[in-house]
Image (cartoon, rainbow, N blue to C red; front, side, top):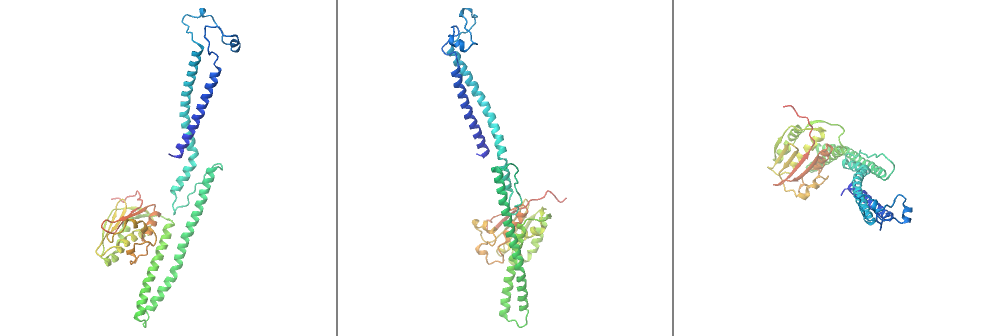
Length: 380
């Protein structure tokens, strides 16, 4: 039961209890006041009763009209009490209905700031912490709660920004020494007197250096996408897919993997560089974590679906693949850095989209990317 319903029920319950108590009090007071108990209309009133109630006069029964109904005082009192009781109950029920409606309206107005807090919390994401409640009103408990919530968001936003700046700055600082190391290794390998052992060691160091540079580039891209989109433009996603498939053609030929593509025109409002990285990471992962003679299927209709063949992926391991540096045990021998799906997820969120994955039936992985499509269509 929602809080508004509970508050309305409490309001109505308190009103009914107070109304019943009031009816009981009125009934008791009326019973104490009733003066006709034990008397008849045709009989003369006692002297003290006539003095107490001067508006009541006694008449002889013989002078009453023929159609006069003579009742006893007890019957008259009982009938009066019953009439008052039932009319009071009906009035209480009508007032209770009105009280329930008023309670519902008042509860809604009282809880309106809580709805504002809840809706703001639902709209918040790690990439969009700029929303605030900024509740206006008297300094009551709800105002204090809203201000506390805004203060917490300020601290969270500051913490996230500091973390992203640290990753970006650290990645930039690491690129320079890696570039220097690569240059020194290439110079050493180009020396005429370099031995075979030195050349083998140099080739291994160059490979390690390349892996480190890819890792740093991935961290920079991840930090950039986590900060959200500074600018947007219209991008044809199907053209991005065609370009990235062409880029991955050499790697696919080396791995003996074939592509199958089925797409339509699909327009997205976003960053073309980040979208290219999203598609490129999906395709390279699908090729790298495939088997010789395998295939990669790309479908673009309501969403982008990339599936590949390959080793069986346990269902319980799929959520962990979206975490940075998380890979399956049998994937550690590949050239990947473990950031591919993390970058895909981050870029999709920056475009207000979503990513989910599931194991492929015959082995491999199926990744679904849902990106908001614009209402613009290319004329046929």
